[in-house]
Image (cartoon, rainbow, N blue to C red; front, side, top):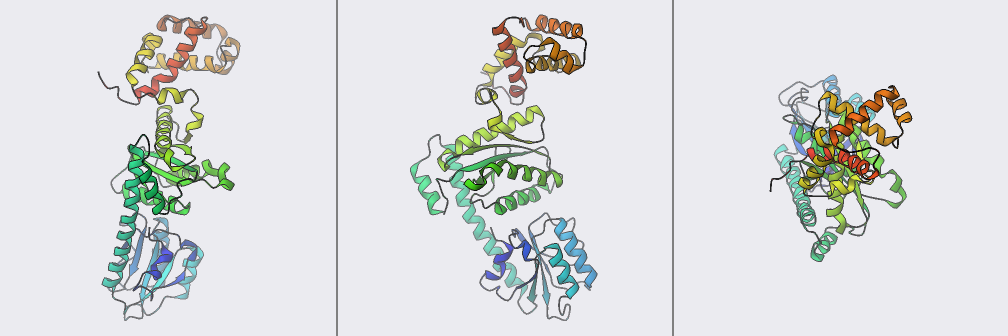
Length: 390
């Protein structure tokens, strides 16, 4: 990916100089955008490098400040102002000071440097970088598709500069819903997150969402989940509601296993309706259920043990199921369960009796109680995925 600090390093663009906002030097440049005025809010999605030529509008200091304010709010990577021309002679000190205060990269480009040359050189650099990332994407897809990684694939990874022996954390990000125009912006935010955290892996479209991979530094091992929580909060702040499932591996040859675990974690988060980052390690016994590919087998088990309560989510059924869940969480204690639910002991006893009638299981039988508890745990999980007919 081309970053802001790389702009003057591109051959032919050495005359472009950074005037302010070096704090944003790691910002990713997704594409060049030429602004004719400061009304950009509906036309940028994040990662654009904005060029102002001054040709079609009379720019004043307040206009540049307004542009910087809007651009930063939309996660634009930076601003390039063409100077030494009949339209814009120089950049006002007030504009430079504001950009520096906001940490927003501001460049100056001599008007004599043709824009057609600048956009061509920058666009070519972006495309070359994307092609290099595409090669790594192919490599990742191969690892994800192979049950046992081919040694040649791992050798190629090393050639790309990837440490195949490094521990890593992977996240499956599944958006709830995307509107028109949201896709580019969401992808930019995810790419910027990977870049900020030093990932050698590009963003990968996978399993109705995106797979992200980060290296785990030994000194920062305990803070790994915090990084994914920061991502969740960043997306949420930008009105991108999503579910995130995470898992970890010790070396690159475990990528397939880790990705599948992250998927299982995000699926669990979806059926639990929890808008948080969910770690595969927290699934407990659900790891066994979510790892079974033939959900029809689980459905048969659930139907057998939940009886008339299976696949019912009306008010009465939900009341009985939530009561049963609470009963199991409190280790079958009628006193503790009634206290937690704030209901009379007799009310609880009546509900449990009705559950036994509808399910055909006795809560006094340890084996039947275990089957009922497992069926209750499986039900929503299997109903989030279609069951293939035989």
